Length: 352
Image (tube, rainbow, N blue to C red):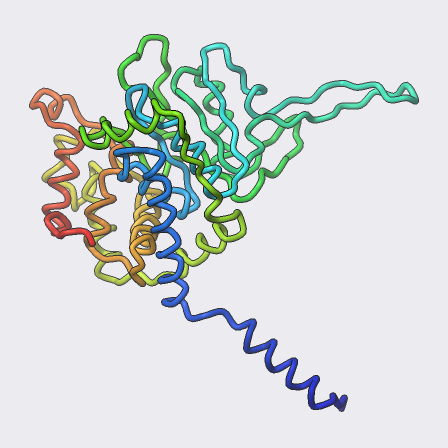
């Protein structure tokens, strides 16, 4: 048996103790404090959009993508750029237009001739090869171009000429839509909408927030947003999210909520006349991850019903469609989700 000097044994023992990670609750508390600082820093750059900031962070912490919907001038582009800087992610922006082609997103192969006269194809990477991609006004591109993102969003890789090219990790897409100008646009198909973890509705800021914005953006000083996390720390946070426990009662509440939002299910008999089509299993998965992320951002070791009530609408509203009967009665998707929450007992609990 090999023998070691006593000082070597002590060094090995100290290294083993030092390398042991702290318990999960302690890591959650520490990470929650850092995320709180990150939210504050983002709020000093993006005024009056605290909810949009929180939801965008939840989508990224869950390892997913988000669809931001709002009129022009509400800092959607600034939010994505600020997240890229604060999280130290390589970020790129694509302005979607009707003449945009799939190769403009994923890249293409070009034929080159070497010094020896032989010809070969070389793949030139498109802007999708980044860690945070902003797809600006995604519904202005044709369905063919929109579908170029499907494989990238789901499998984190793209295929060109039979060759598969992995994307950087982590990889997130934050897409924007303008809800006003619909001429010349192509609505996103249900399959692509389902790839977005959350739909974030970006509203007008309140008066005081808009006043702060006015004074801050028309002066001579600019607020510089420093890096707050790096890609490795973000990946570690995403792993912590998946290790957080979720109680059986909350799991059942998520399943009840999603299944009642589907027509044809036994649980949704009273809602069938209002819902044309409802959310699939990805909605349950999205809620299970999102509630954990929200608890983590508030430094709590496990999610509760208040997290489900806060995130039900962002997760479900782009995964549902109403019947003509519901539209004729003036019922909106938000009304349906509120009814579903009341039935499951998730509404009315104050979020922490």
